[in-house]
Length: 151
Picture 1: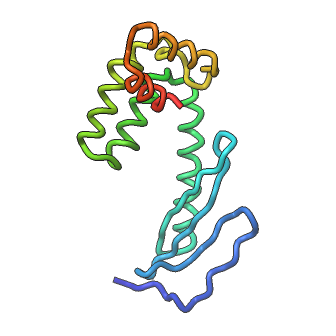
Picture 2 (picture 1 turned 30 degrees about the vertical axis):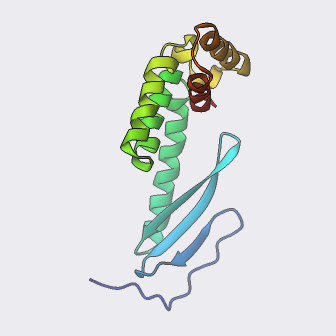
């Protein structure tokens, strides 16, 4: 295995293009923040060469942009289901994940806004959905769990 020469100076990138550093394993870590929906998302890739890092970052940025365009027309229920599987399941205990899924299946999937594209849901739509849970007689803790998933 060929080890990267860490004594070689990495170039300083222009403002907004990210940073390059060597990792403990001798690889190059390339970090960059990109604008996503009015906020910034931090991306990081590693590689053995600068070209490898730049290519990986370009690919990652393209995947995020493509995902954002296709995700904007997803119904709310599909988007939340994906979020649960991709992001919450790996980071929470199995019992906590199970509780999130129960809340999703029993309250959120049944809401009138579940089939509406999530980018088109307004604050009034969310409030009406929460009010519907109140009139159905759900407990405040159940309503709060559903509310927390929606906001």
